[in-house]
Length: 437
Image 1: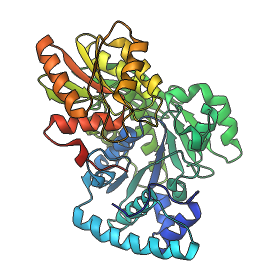
Image 2: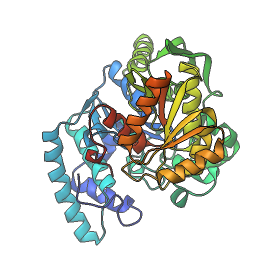
Image 3: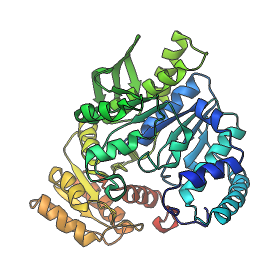
Image 4: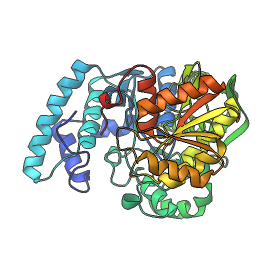
């Protein structure tokens, strides 16, 4: 999209601030309208649900997420509609000119993600968004989203990821993500951050940030996860909403939905348009109607084929638990792989023991060697029938042949590129035509 490397020269905050100024982005207004979502897993779903609640409340709502799954345009949406190609091209030219100007004066290289973040800010401003939901790229301390100065943020979950940038302990990683929040703001922490509560309360104390935790200050009760639908009871402050329905599958979505609802309620406290009945209606419809591809998504019915884009060990385990809770644990074929820069042994180790038939393959984009995946699968589950598919195309063909011959279902998991390439090929496309950065 941009003729830029994925990342720029070191920490980006100063050059990003200058870029936003050159583009005449009103950062004071941006701060008033925005919330920020950080975390290791669940960011995209949480951001989509929060934006859905905002739309249901009647607000013009912007949504910035990453990565995209099929098209760059997915990353920037207003009221659920992806940015159009013509608008994208026009804003891209404007941002490119500003990037060239600032880069020349500062003697620094911008990254493509930074340019895209600036484009989103500009688009939301031009469209007059009332609410903007931003998903962080990596961490929070030095991510461009920190420049928003949001006073309502969240950490959906914490896991070992990007340790070379964020640190090699969960305390370091969650601290980095927490720093997306402005001083005096409120940070919502997902359920798996509960063990870090004492650390986080002290870490946030002197910045005056309030720490709220799912299942402590934010209540979740009576969760039901099934193929026929999901629902739960939500409690926060004086809000008590029983039987909230979710469209997104997986028990992990209860955590994400509770965070999304609380994030919106906190944001709304700073704005005058409050009506308790409208709030409840918006939360219910926003969560019920939210759509987010790639998470336990059924892409085909015959044979039943479910893909999941989770790519951290904890995310993999949560999705597997969701799969079995919704669809049952029997009669599955696993198609798996992992990216070269991920903990392949741990990812495959979390998946392989639950499947009797495993097809190991390599994504076209950054896929680890299929033979290495197979070795990890054999180590984790010596009793499984292991197949090696040299390409995603071979994996699609083999998995569907086996599924039909043995009356089984297909689960595709282990990495984002793997899942999206499989879905693309299964629908008649080509993996090599997908563009990621």
